[in-house]
Amino acid sequence: MESLSFNSTQIPKQVIPQVFTINSHLLQSNFKCCRFSFNTHLHTLCSSRNLSLRIGCELKISSDGKNKPIPKKIILSDGAPSLSEDVSGNEKIPAKSRKSGMMRPFGSVPRKLLGVLSNLPLAIGEMFVIAALMALGTFIDQGEAPDFYFQKYPEDNPVFGFFTWRWVLSLGFDHMFSSPVFLGMLVLLAASLMACTYTTQIPLVKVARRWSFLHSAEAILKQEFADTLPRASVHDLGIILMGAGYEVFLKGPSLYAFKGLAGRFAPIGVHLAMLLIMVGGTLSAAGSFKGSVTVPQGLNFILGDVMNPTGFLSTPTQTFNTEVHVNRFYMDYYESGEVSQFYTDLSLFDIDGKEVLRKTISVNDPLRYGGITMYQTDWGFSALQILKDGEGPFNLAVAPLKLNGDKKLYGTFLPVGGADSPNVQGISMLARDLQSIVLYDQEGKFVGVRRPGSKLPIDINGIQIEIVDAIGSSGLFLKTDPGVPIVYGGFGTLMLTTCISFLSHSQIWALQDGTTVVIGGKTNRAKVEFPEEMNRFLDMIPEIVESSLPKQSEIINH
Image (cartoon, rainbow, N blue to C red):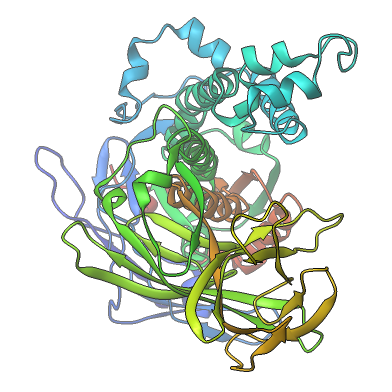
C-alpha cells in the first residue's frame, strides 16, 4: 500500500507533530507517488496550528474508462489571503481591511451620500438622461452661428409648442457635448460608478478572497449543490480539486476550495472602463482644436492661425507654430471624367524654417504630426494660367459659380478691347475640374475646349489663347483630439473585462464527518455546468474499504 506523507515544518512557539500519514485507495489506484516535481502549499490548519506541506503527484483522470496521465503543477502563493469562518457559532478570524490608495478619499464621504450615489436606479436614470442628451445633440445642428438658431427655432413658431432658440443658446445645446448640462450628468454618473465600486464591488472581492470554512454539515447542505459521499476521504477530494485548477485549503476535517476569482474583479474593470470612456469623451469635446482651410497650390499657412478651440480645456502646444506649404495639388479621374481622388503634397517647417515632414495626403490618408491630424476633405480651382498672343503667363483668378445640385462649376474672364470702353467685353472660360477648359468668345459663343499644358493655342476673334496650367486649391480639415487614446483604452478595457466577467467564481466546501464526506458548492455563473462538474468530482473519489479507513487520531494529531 502506497501512502502520501505530510511532513510538517516547525513553527515557533507551537507544537506540531512531526509526521502523520493518510492511507487511501485513491493513492493506490489513481495516484502514483513520485519524487516531488512541483511545489505547492496545501494550507492545512489544525485548530490554530499551521502546517506547510509539499505534495508531488501525477493525476490520472478518466471519464471514459481509460486512464490518461495529466501531469500538473499546482502552486499556491505564500502570501495567501486571510482566514475567516462562515458558520454561526464558530470562530471568526477577520481579514485585514486595507483601503486602496485610489479609494481612500471616499473615507471622508458620508455613508448616506455614498448610499444614494451607489443606488442602481439612480445610475440607470443618469444613463438614460445622457442618452437622451446625445440624441438631442444629433437632432440639433452643432456649432452654428446664433442667426442660424434664430431662424430654425423662432419664437413665433416653437418646435413642439415650446422649444425655441432660447433653449438652445441658454443651455448650450449648440455645443451639446461640452455644455454644462451634459458634462454635469457625466460627472454625476462617474460619481455613482465610483461609489458603487467602493461600497459594493470592492467589499465583494475582499470577501471572495478570504478562506471561508464551514464546520457543520447543515451549513454545507444548504449550498446550491450539496451531496454526501460515504466511505470517502476529504483529502482525496482536495487533491482532485487541485488537479482541476482549484485553490484548496484544509483545516482539520474541513476543506475549502475556489477558482475563477478573476471574474469577481470584472465589474470593477467595467466601471473603470466606463470612467475612461467618459474622461476621454469629455477631453475630446472640451479640450480639442478644430479648423478648416482652403489653400492654393504654392502658398503657405500657420497651423495656429486656422485652429480654433472647442472648449475650456483646449490648450495650444508648440506644434501650432508649424508652417505648412502646399507643394502641389492634383487629381485622378475615372474614365467617365468624374473625379476619383485628389492629392496634396505637403511640407511642414518648424519655427526655424527647417522641413520636419513631407507627405502626400489624400482622402482617407491623413497626415499626423505633433498631435494634429490633417485630412484631405475638399478641393477648389484657384487660378488659370494662360498665354495671350505669346505673352505672359498671366494668372486669372477663378471663382465658383452657383449651380443647382452638387456639381461644381468655376469661371474666369479675360477682358479684351479698350480699357475706357463703357461695355467691357472679353473671353469667358469655364471649367468643372482641372482637366479641361471650355472657352467662349465675346458674344458668348462656344469656341472650343483645351486641356491645361497641351500647348495647343486657340484663336478667338484674332487673339491667340494658350492654356498653360490650371492651379487648384486644397481643402484641408485639421483637428487635435487628446481624448482618442483614452477612449480607445476604455473600450479595450471594457471588452477585456466583459470577457473576464464570464469566468465563473466557484466555491466548494467539504467536511469529513466520520467516514462520510459532506460536500457542497456554489457558483455565480455556469449554473448548469457546475453540478455536472461536481458530479464528475464525486465519481472520481474512490471508496475506502474497512481495512484502510484511517482513524480520526491518524488524520489529525493534536
